[in-house]
Length: 94
Image 1: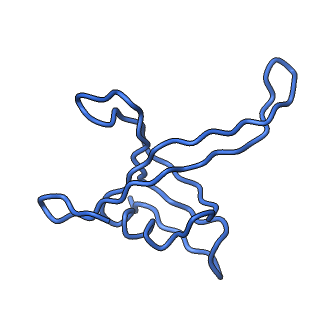
Image 2 (image 1 turned 45 degrees about the horizontal axis):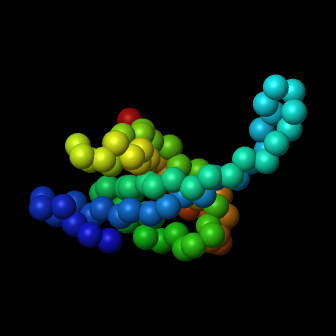
């Protein structure tokens, strides 16, 4: 974990997606990896997770920086599906 100049915690990580999808009437396996980042409370929550934990992450996609247009998922909600006892969930309250 690192911290912004204002002191907010930030963590960067890689998410792996695996699923079965139907394309043109044919079922296929889909797998990919993509970069993600979490700031503040979400960063602290992600530090609890270990490699291989199953999570559901929600957020928005933005360019990595002004110089790099590589997409990065900025996580705003995390739901832990497997990996710890009794479950753990965090999301922004409205």
